Amino acid sequence: MSQLDHHVLDIDYQSEADRICARLREITARQLHRRGLVVAISGGIDSSVSCALAVRALGPERVFTLILPEQDSSDDSAARARILAEHLGVRTETVDIAPALAAIGCYRARDEAVRNTLPEYGEGWKFKIVIDGGTEGRINRFRLVAQSPDGTMHERDLALADYLTIVAATNFKQRIRKTLEYFHADRLNYGVVGTPNRVEYDQGFFVKNGDGSADVKPIAHLYKSQVYGMARHLGLPERVCAAIPTTDTYSLSQGQDEFYFALPYQQMDLALWALNHGRPAGELAIALGITPAHAQAVYDDIRNKRRTTKYLHMAPVLAGDVPELD
Figure 1 (cartoon, rainbow, N blue to C red):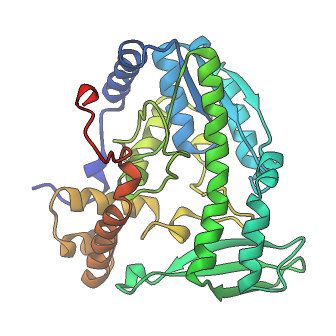
Figure 2 (figure 1 turned 180 degrees about the vertical axis):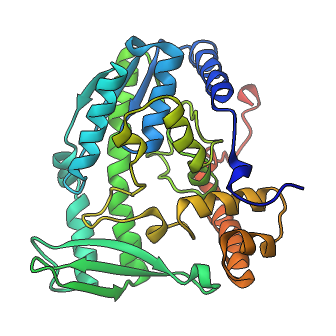
């Protein structure tokens, strides 16, 4: 049995890129019966690699990209996305989705829920949500972290109803983006690319009928570390290859491990690989330099997220059989 370290995630990037691209050509033409692919690019590593693989498979003339910022998006994210589009030579369109989000009440509903916890929250404030407790073996609790215009930081526990409202409101962002992706896919007779990596796909870190909706997901089997490795293998711009994973959803910068995952992505990759390959928690503890109890709590958190997000992967459940379409 090989030693448990990050080398277990090593792959032959040339062979894997060739395999994915062959599958993308086959899926697009023979299963989807579409002429090309639409990719929403955020400037992050996952959408960048997904787009680059689509271009490698089909050519830049058959890939259409969208940059879809809103009022909480980082300016740097859009800048990286434009750099990627220019590097790959693809057609791109930028649409600010903030007016649509405002019209359907995204920001209003979110801000009202924030003010239930922090009444002074208002114009010029920034905030994010963080989780706490799960990796210590306790029940996760949700915390609001906010910054006032004068720079003062505030932190409060969120009531469940307010947490759910904030998340529901921010999920509008992913669903509006997906609406635009499918508009362009319909007009071009293209398929839509989904961009989750393996940890996100496994752990349900996506919005149902939002970024979870797609016709093909080319990197859902690749661990995040492997996605970074693929980006460098494909020769993507350094600003893309060096992008730090963030949710790019809240006005305060937020790491994915703050909001959802039990560990930073390098450690999370190894933990998920170890659990998938039956490695005991004690071995993971040694590899990550954490306690066995902490490693076991990480395993428990992975299993719990699989259980609670299973419905995100499900097709609509029918109340009766339709055998002709099974």
